[in-house]
Image (tube, rainbow, N blue to C red):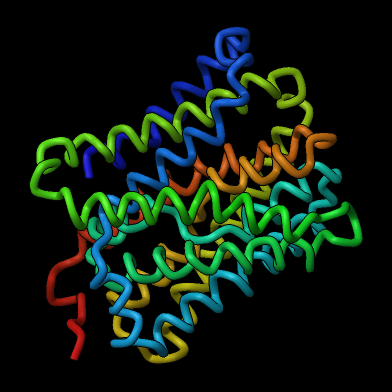
Amino acid sequence: MIASMLFPTGAVLIALFSWYLPAVLNPYGEAIVPLLAIVMFGMGMTLRPENFLDVCKRPGLILLGICLQYIFMPMIAFVVASLLGLNKALFVGLVVVGSCPGGTASNVICYLARGDVALSITLTTVSTLLAVFLTPFMTWLYIGEMVPVPVIDMMLDILLIIILPVAAGVLVNLYFAKYLRRLKHYFPFISVAAIIGIIGIIVAQNHDQIPLVALPLLTAVFWLNLGGLASGYFFGRIFRLDERICRTLAIEVGMQNSGLGVVLAGTYFPNLPLATLPGAIFSIWHNITGSILAGYWSSKTEGEVQTEV
């Protein structure tokens, strides 16, 4: 929990460091994929088989969350990019981020916001598994006419850098948890450090271009994140779900696995280097807004939070 709360500060500091000293991290572009794999392994270390069985207990809620994640977020990204008239690189990068699964930090933010943590973990897990198919498909659906989207290759890469590390983490946690009890406390810090490293590398590699796109980029990330948070919360209200679930849906939909967005944009759109920036900036911004929301919601009295029946 401490690691996730420190993330926004660390991310801003590394971005500033890379801005003023880009030569330090610029050569380490090839480290981005292994760093993301470390993050996903850390996510797997927090999961147990019962997390996957929770899908059977509340299939309607899981379906709602997944629909919001993979239908609304890519659509919001496309609409925002179109209305702001983003250049091709930022347009592509924003849609890729919008098509990614839920972010790993959402579970901690959900806990701090007094949401439904079990539901949050299940939604993150299911959306991550479905990312193999849905992230490439939604990316192709919205930008396939703009740039070539190698859907099959993207599926295979997501399998390798997301699903396999998560599965490895689950297996290690299942069979060796008692031997790694002390070590597991350090994994959140390792994961946060890995994401911070990715942000630093991306900022360093795009140092010269950032001033030219800063305003439209920040505006686009702001509206994409706000759209996800709002749609998750208000659709929960529309379906008359209790406050804890509404909060959980807001956080799950509004917080993306932007590290994956960075990797996919950098791997499959190398001629558009700025396409990695939306993911890097989103990584910082969604943790800031998530922390603010968590602080606001947690400050409410226990009596204002309805319990599940």
